[in-house]
Structure formats: structure tokens, C-alpha cells
Length: 183
Image (tube, rainbow, N blue to C red; front, side, top):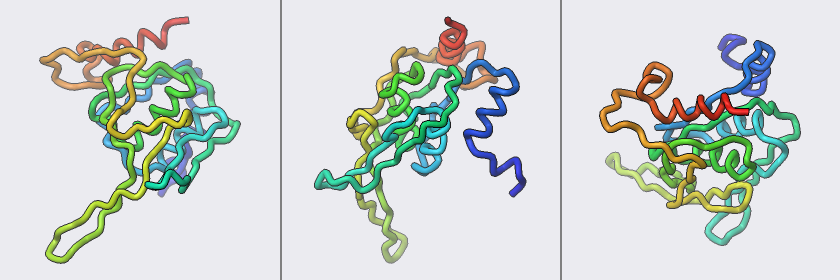
């Protein structure tokens, strides 16, 4: 890995701030999640000191409590989510929403708020075992509920894609940029 590839989220945000960037759009639409540690790293870079996410077992016992520190970049931001935003991306969106750190724009997220381990079985079969559930800083469950956006925005039915390359028709991105320009 090169030196540039191992930069942390905090360093990247600081570089953007140093370069004069006044705001960012964190686009998590279509992000099915992934590793909690990656979501935590981003959260630690943009959120004040808090309990970022808590994992509890089926008895309600805390298995793990991810806490952010008090060093963060308070760059203005807007977060984009949709029905394809799930798991780790919902954890991050939930923490941002609970702490009122940024406006959430788009559509309600998927609602996958559990940790599942896959156990390989003979002949290629597998078993998914749910081991814990995620809770946002306010103690809310994400599972089967999702994260509601602050500003709900539909996309046009005939849209060819989302993101900066489709800015002319991406109504959610347009709204995010409009919010960033406010104040």
C-alpha cells in the first residue's frame, strides 16, 4: 500500500478543509454496508465524543460499544441515503441523525440492524446466524425500521443514474447541494 492509500478519514477531511472546502456530501445511497470498523472510522472523523453504536445480544447485554473521541472535523455536510443504504451505512447515518450533525436527504434506509455470521456447511450450503443487534447513540434500533431522512426526496422515474455524473437529473444530490449552500 502506498502512503496515500493508508490515510485516515480524519487526515482526508483535514486536507479538504485545508484546501478550502466548505462542505461535503456524504453519499451512501446504494451502500449495502460492510465492516462496522470502517463506518466507525468515518464517524470518529466527523462526530463529537459519543457512543457511536452499541451492539447488544439477544439478552439485551452490551457486547460492544464503539465510542468516538472529542477530536473531529465539523465541516458542513449533508448525507444522502436511500432504500439501498443498509447495515454499516445505516449505523453511520443513524449516529449523524441522532447527534443532529447533518441533514439526511433521500429515502428511508433498508433497515438491516443486526450482525450476522455465516457458517459454511458441507456441499456449499451455509447458515446465517444472527449474533447481535445495532443501536444508535440514542438507543434506537435500526433493524426493520431504517433511518428516516430529514428531507425526503424522490428521484425521477426515468433517471439513468445517480451521483455527480448525473447531477442534472439527480434530484436528491441537487437538494443536498442546495442545503449545503444555505446559511
